[in-house]
Image (spheres, rainbow, N blue to C red):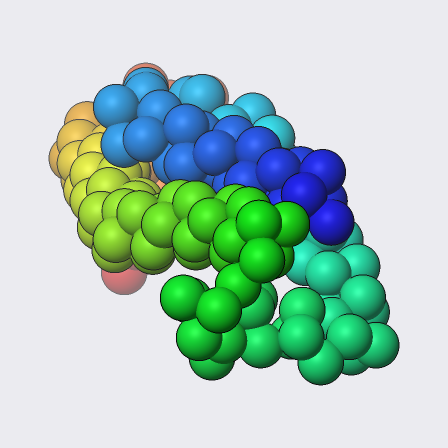
Length: 151
């Protein structure tokens, strides 16, 4: 049980580390960091699911992991499990506090990218506008810009 809790905490620590990196990394690194973060999350969820399986068969363990057990009455093995559980929960709380910052960073990066695209489209349109008009009015065999008027 302790090993499983330590595995969960270790995976959550990886998620936390990558979440912090996302806050400071260049946006080009996002895909790789997010993929790695997803791998750690998957492993943490697998460990959590295994813990739930074990908890369902042991009422005392269920009480310890849910925090409903009387701390003063816990034997040493259960106390160690309780403390390991608290460490994992603390890591999870820190991740949850970072999450809004990650979302804000990603939204900011998206807004900057859209702004840059709009600038490129605007500058391309203003540069290409006169050429487009010239090509539309050009007649084969005549210089571009020389228009033919029909009567």
